[in-house]
Amino acid sequence: MKLTHTDYREAALLRLEEARRLYDQQLWVGATYLAGRAVESILRSLLALKARPHESGHDLARHLAQVQHAGRLKDNELNRLRDDVNEIAVVWHNNLRFAGEGAFIALLKTMKRDRRIGDMRVKGDPAKANAKYTRDATERIVHIGEAIWIRWQRNSRQS
Image (cartoon, rainbow, N blue to C red; front, side):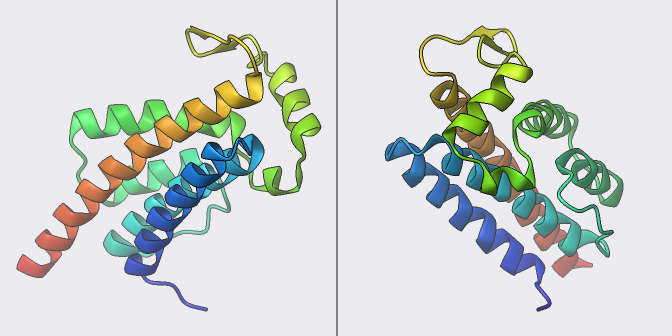
């Protein structure tokens, strides 16, 4: 199936909504996984809109580098995207879809994200704290990605 930039954008918005719902239901692993998928989808939508996408698997940092190369990003957009994508990429992996809560907590412990997320001290359930951080960062990424998508879409129509 060949997907377009519009398909990826729609998928990003849908995955974000699904991640929110799973978070609200306290399903931390699923919320984290779908948040990462939302990030991947919005980055892929930008690549599909601006350039011929290169296959990067599910490497969020590489997708962001390709987006940066494909078009002009404002410094504040790039800095915010880079910070959030890098933080999410630490926790999110495509095979997270196979993990249960125990495996997720074990992963967090190996990365010491059961104690700290960036400069924030984790209080309480580390799976919940990481899911919340991932959800919040994903909200910012999709919001910025949407603004870029609209700007690039408008510019491509004017060309």
